Image 1 (spheres, rainbow, N blue to C red):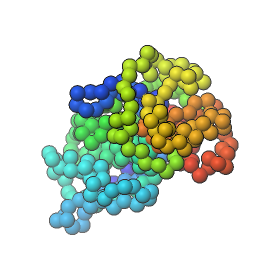
Image 2 (spheres, rainbow, N blue to C red):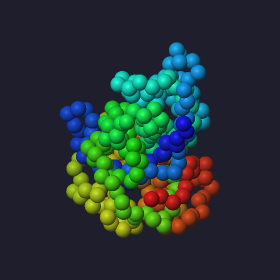
Image 3 (cartoon, helix red, strand yellow):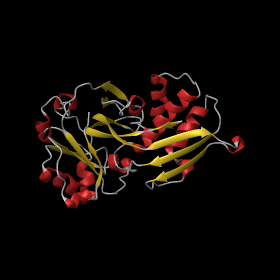
Length: 274
């Protein structure tokens, strides 16, 4: 079976509180992108060797056995039986980029195995399993635009299309940002107005009203990320923001735009969003 785990961006990301369980409460709008990895799994030829993962494409840190994809398989095996698998993951979504690549890989594998081997898990149960793997992992079960709160697992479908007829450019400087470290260096605070309310504003008003609370710390540590955001505005973006805890930055334009040569090397995706 072949599936294509998609990337996401965050339109706004507010860190609203620290929880007793050590996690943080957030509010954000998750939006899926066409940018995707490729994930294939088949029955392993040698069942005695167990599950095997091969990773190609963009380099990602860590050993295959420690990949979140293998964590997802082990999680399913705790209560369900299915054959040992040979898994091939081809990475196109950069790691540590604020795009949810690993979480998406894990969620799409959960869905794929459930469907392929008739585990009969409904979406709510899949989301419960996904949450044990990562706070943004449940979003990728449906993988449709959603307003997220709690750790990121409380999802309300977002059916409006504020970016219809807009053009989005996604940049990545090749820096891996440690999400745990980013959270440790941010101060949670309750915003005066909810992100859900701010997203209802016209897109050209988002610049003054929608923010990513990670930007202060991450921009100080990695000035190039801030520079890319500023360059997108100079190029004509009506809104630009870092996605997640970085390092990717996106710009939203009213039309397809000629991108300066200085930004070309950083483009990892461009096209229509929502």
